[in-house]
Image (cartoon, rainbow, N blue to C red; front, side, top):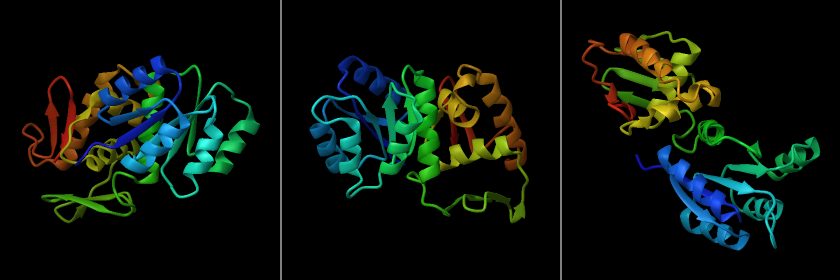
Length: 226
């Protein structure tokens, strides 16, 4: 499965570089634009899975960029803004903004929002699509999991973790990305949470949890569903 493309549009070159670095570390493919014109051009050329867009930009601000994007595109948009007033958020949602991140923000929070929007909008896996691997069948629409034809119950957190892994099947998902997407940015660095729930998944999905064939570990990096 190819990496999701994330287009970042911001006139702050330093922030743009930092954002691209963190997006890359989270196993996304970043593209950057320092102006509205360049951003609109890249949106057409690269067809990204999500756009991170700064509101305060010269010449063409984020509102105008968003308006132009929405004329012929449904690409999810996360707005970066220094303003938290309700009127600004309402304006953004009216234009079709999918989420907001207010400056100053942590990079882990932004990565969590990116992952959440991608899952919610179904850019990685078509809505309602099933993922199957051997005796395991996962239905994202009904949020159900079968093993050898038998329905298996999961806690909300267990299912959320399995869903993130399955939506990126055959790709290793970094542990930190799992943390922020499943538990939230406040759990960044708490790797023991992931380890505990991975073991819980293996006990429910694997014939031999000690020698897993579906929930695999890439030591020092993350986990992969196969």
